[in-house]
Image (cartoon, rainbow, N blue to C red; front, top):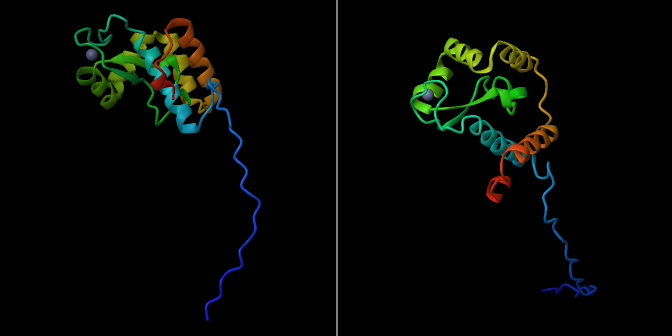
Amino acid sequence: MVTLAKPVHRAPRQPKPIQRRARVRKIGAGSHAQQVRKANALWVALIRAKEPSGICPRCHKSKWTDAAHLFTKGGYPGVRFDLDNGVPLCRMRCHRRIDSDHEAKREFALRYLGKERYEALRLRAIGRGKCDMLLTLMYLQQTYDKFLKPLPAAECR
Ligand SMILES: [Zn+2]
């Protein structure tokens, strides 16, 4: 025997209220991954701006292509977005070289930053201080706005 379910009387569906999306995304809005992507885009743009000539500051021969970390982002996450920890380098001659030769990297970093700034960066790197994403983003955004023009919207997402 087939039993039919009793019809359930429901109140008519109410239309969902329209939620207005904020037009301006606040600094720090979005997931952690989105914040990291945005911080990285700002960091890369600021590092590239260090050498407006476009020439790699290590070999003075090739054009720079990469924003290289002096202290690796994996080994020293606390200085991943530190502006002293980045330098625009050419990939083939210099970035690969310093990433595979610790002494060459140290020697270049000392020359590029000077002894005092290098030592201060080294202490920040080994200090294992945690990188506060919100403060990092605010700092990078303020520095970017002060020195560079607004990022294309695609990179801000
Ligand atoms: Zn180079």
